[in-house]
Image 1 (cartoon, helix red, strand yellow):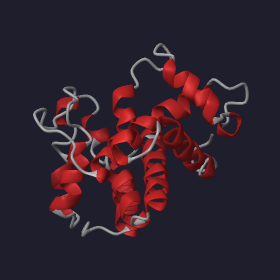
Image 2: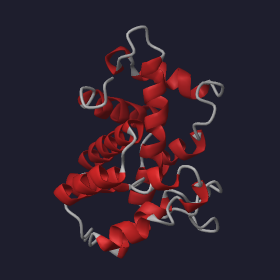
Image 3: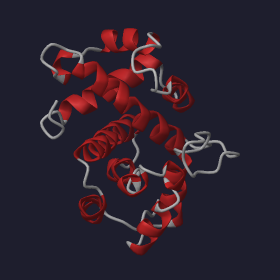
Image 4: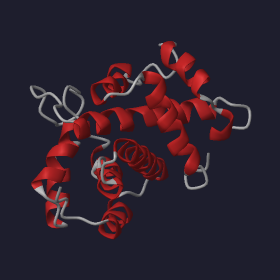
Length: 194
């Protein structure tokens, strides 16, 4: 896969376009889960990580007008040398989500597309699970409690569980996916203040 952007360039883009600390944390979390999934499947960890890191590169520019989200991103990445393949994979995480500018009549097809959508959505559930712990730390969260929180539809009600369940389309059970995601975020807990 040719992304057209290496890790150093991806980090520079995040520093250039993302000023909100919560957004930066979300990108780091998505990168970590994508790297862990790539490791699990024997895929290229660096490439999958970069895709996770850049998937919301236009969010700070578009958060007040979400219909522009994923519309401004192609220009940003093209200018930096990003390939059409990179841009297409990133756009796919917005398929079926009318609040953003991604095409609504398309569906995710590839393992990479399903992984990105599920991984970036999972970050919200895991972070919220840490924040309700007495110490507000990821170390206090375990897979069993995550499964309970996933099943409790009122917990982080805006977290799209249907997208998280796309983990099954890449060959993982929900429990396996939650465990991979949790371990990935625990491994970067110092970088995301959790």
